[in-house]
Image (tube, rainbow, N blue to C red; front, side, top):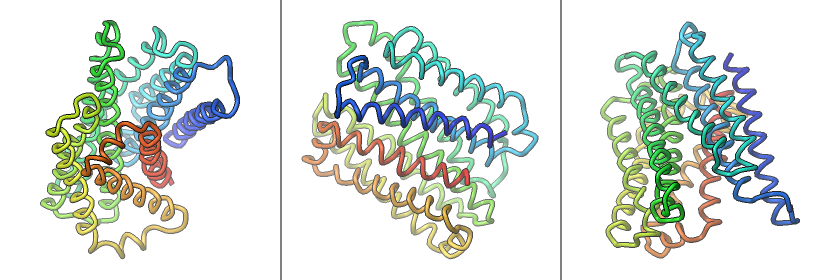
Length: 332
């Protein structure tokens, strides 16, 4: 079943890519019938909710649940209903942007993600210290996913009022994106990484896992400060963000030191295309943290949230080079 599901998720990825090509073509030749913002909304929702969400859905079920749990009808129904919501967003966003149908289907997707998180965590149970790291990160990933969606529900009254284009509106959008990218996706991929290590009987000491986890979690919380500095450029927010990116850099250094004794064992397990995909994902993760670390310099921090193309490039670095490469590696 997960193989069939992955084919559907890949179709969503292809459709998201087609929308991306259309957006780029609009800079070359006029496309009179297209509303660029509507296509952008469709592209982002297909990439994030149609491709990455469903990919993590598939991988988490495959890596964490046994065959009996995977065969439960609840996961089949949740996947099918989620895909219906994705198709609904794909058909509605290009023609109405945020309208009745697109909001209905995106709300359905959120509610289904809650149902998945509840069912999945319930089936996880407790596997003792052997799976401590992977369980800690997967539960946190799902928790951060849920937290990110709170912004979408708060957005409804903002959009219905005169604050539609206010700092509140954009702040809520950034809240959702931040805890999706730096929370749900990153912690989800790390949970799969630790699960794979546990499968290979490479068990990281609990104390070290907690230190790495704490550094990464607090960095995720503090770096949200950069997302609101464009509307509230006070020095305190810059300092909070600087603390966050510093903790994230320390987490990266600590991760490599923590895994150093196991490098040779891991290298022997990975070969060919799987090694190449993991290498791309890891190098992109390093680049993400290095780029974010540069914003401790106030001038670069200002560039980071005022130059749109910089932001777009950074988003694609995370979603395509890091997360998507990791998804392909784990699926392989």
